[in-house]
Length: 463
Ligand code: HEM
Image (tube, rainbow, N blue to C red):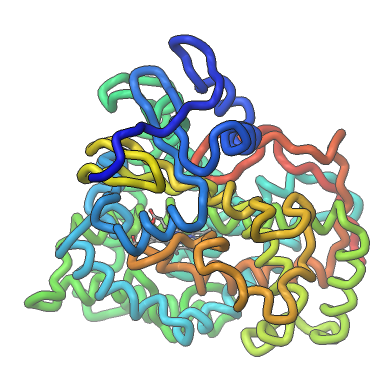
């Protein structure tokens, strides 16, 4: 260790430090903090300090070059048990090895028709001229897609609301007022979290039991049901395989690839948390940006009309929807669904000219890097056209990291990008969305996933 100086703190209040500033406006706070202190600073919260790294080079250090000095926080384990998002070392690498092939781009692209079909089912509930909270609609949509594709499960009307409500609660652990307090303090958010976790675990166990019963009875397996419903045009996974069926198969295998039932349950819970609100956030903010940027919207509609010519999008169309892809990329930059990646120092470590002690909480501020004018001209403007002419190839590797980086990079990124592109294309082909909120400056919730405080109200008009 060559440095002894701890990172500076932006101006704050005595005792409560930066709790109110961050809680009221998390994006505004990180912007002010980097202006006052630079790319490494200390956020003071009651009872704890959180060191924030806000420069691309420091994110690279934490995720790649010095990755062993920045471990996962205990919260992940407490919340997701032994799911792949929280485990470390040998256990993580074994789990990642089993799961990775299930998220191979080729396999993921087999989910395309189910993603489009689920979006069409949701659009069938929209009426011309109706006002909707698009953030909430996209949360319903992504939970429906996740249950259909990964678990082979069609949600009955109303059932999705219950599961969504339970899934919403998972994020409540990560509200700063809860997140950073000792885990035994019973805050209201934690209470909601515990209820949600129990409800989701009951549902997951039911799905697992259903799968095992059907499999062992030698009659109809869940995979068969899935295959059949897919051919009926209903829902359900690629080539009769769902994450659930593949994991259950892996559980029966011996040797290194053995997964026990508790681990399977933890993996399923992890996928719901990691895959639902994140993708909903990406699609909802893309629609918000389109609703408030008429020129981009007109070009987007033109692309859909030209490429799709009135038929529903398929997986083969995705690479030809150039602007739609860039809209997804620009949304992931300006509104990264995970705006902060949490870590904990495992030992003393120097970051730039500062010193971080061991066992300290660290936030990797994705939002700060994505809005840094060092990398992006007019960073607060929504400009899908910046992603042309080899811009991404020239960009610093860690200046665009919506899916994290290094060995812990998001396993579901192909899934999420495919889902976002197809959902946007399916929606944009049929509807024009008009922003009906009072102001375009939206307030963000201080949770780990980027969500608004008041929803995203829009009028939906048939095209
Ligand atoms: C736009 C949507 C998404 C975004 C922005 C996103 C973002 C991220 C980020 C930033 C990480 C790294 C977390 C860390 O290093 O601590 C991550 C990890 C992960 N994501 Fe995603 N994610 C998205 C969608 C999905 C989907 C759809 C799934 C699965 C269906 C998924 C499953 C996972 C898993 C399992 C991990 C943990 C990987 C590991 O530690 O080995 N994500 N995601």
